[in-house]
Image (cartoon, rainbow, N blue to C red; front, side):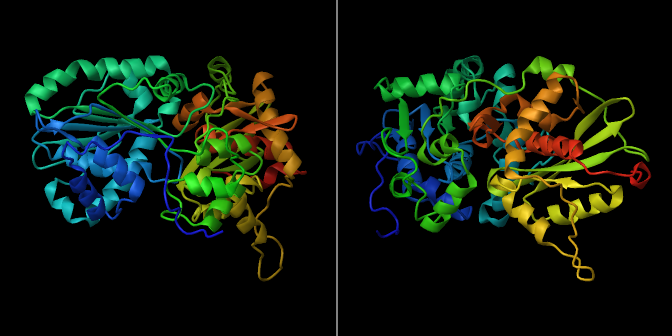
Length: 486
């Protein structure tokens, strides 16, 4: 079978383009092209519809977009170019991009700014503000594009002309309600003030059993309860199709042949290893009903809070590594012993991608004479392979001191870490990233054990701490005097 681009993409549902209304889609597509990301067919299909103009008012027809689509499809591309177009409708407009956390939104904003600075469009704005907490791209007409965390914004209310809420699967019904309560009452005022209909976008990959708002919303939309001014697009494989059939994934994935080839699709499947439910959710856009609750509850996490430890001579140390899906970031953690008290796990550093991780790990290993623990499977497999293959050219001995973790050990490590927390056998140092991830970190079954569910949200910090603790408790004999001082 040919693995060229599928001839025709058939979404599960797509609001039809109304030819009686003009559309602003061509201009949005041009902005996307100038930002270095020419639109692929599915993106243009969505943009042409959501950009339809009401002939009675000369402004947008739709006030809401609900979009659910697989990962690796280019979902954020359409939001960035549309944000730019929206900001140029007039003076002093406010556009928000809200991701699962403030950090996720800031990362997306930094990526957008890289494209913006290379584009001729940069002349339309002032220099971007890049400080955390006040990031913004301000246009010369006074309009702004700003990033933020959806969960934080839900508690404070966000007002503006366009609000893009990404990764909606992570929102509770209360959080979504708070977002709408803060936004919708201002729409009439903003319409009168700016002359342009405000819009709210809800974009996401399918959710899991805990996705209160998204699950309920999609169930109603799929049942035909679609308001007149809501555009609804639902991409994914048929609900009765086999997500393990790569030919089916290829046929129904809107990025197939445009953003990746068939060989890469097979590699994506390998990255999910035995997480069949996570694969079906990410690349088939099929809901994972098996995830219903967080693995570590808030009370336990609070009760096991410990101090930040500064290692010194006589302390036992092991470093752990966690790699995010897609190898977008590497998190390094340490488990550090202390006299007469449980060890403490703490985040050491977060790195972009995996490229600089080997050098940094070698520096930490040599400085503190400590081993490294890393899962040889999943997203960290490629990095683990690099570390394992590096040999000293003089002695032909391994350069990196890796703990002897087998596949069966990696499966039991998360439960071991959780049990240690429950029994007050380990503490964790305060860290914003770990505190964010523990709120959504969920389990996925693997035989009789469980693993961190990587596709329910980023768990790279949780994995790094898990590896550090497992490595610490499985270190061979060590000499206290060999541990170096920070």
